[in-house]
Image (cartoon, rainbow, N blue to C red; front, side):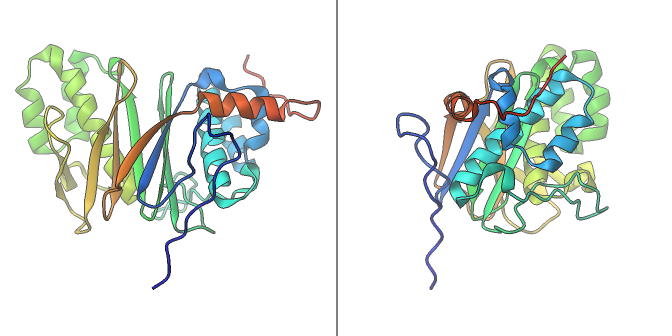
Length: 271
């Protein structure tokens, strides 16, 4: 029986983040967009730069840069590949457009997912099975608009539970439902292809579980300890990881910035 691949260790000292993705361990990297510097452009691939150029808002461009830089640093370290040289495919399995679940076509055994909301960016990396992560800030949804959003985004049992809560509690609960559902749909790669009734998750006030899913495959679901004002969830296919490890990407980005600084750095402007 072949031994599972153990990915290599990253190019930073053990005083900082200390492990590359290992079997049975899901790493969850929390990123602050303000830690992004112009020199981090050198970590991005051409497709990242094209996607970023289409974004009009400077904050959106910073978030994309932060997520792409950290994902490429961690994945590149695991695979022994320069971050910018990694081939990442985002082709949608349904329509063929470049907005599908990101994957490494040349490394089927290493999976990752990214999400961002406001000043919070998160990257999850897991060997062995597809993973999905989602984070949302609770303040995005006002109490008065939750009912209309739930009608479009939640399944019947989820809407019923939400409607039974006091109105001031509904934005927090809706956001909890939202991130749990999004994490599962990112892990499965189904996205908006699944109607709301095709997936039911447990209420946010209870332990995270997938109560119904049209796909017969096993799906695990966990809540994540998100920064204040945000809610986050993690999901994956198959067997749950033995451990989920939170990492602060700030030291990694700062160290990388010092290493990359020099006259050849490409310019990145945020007007």
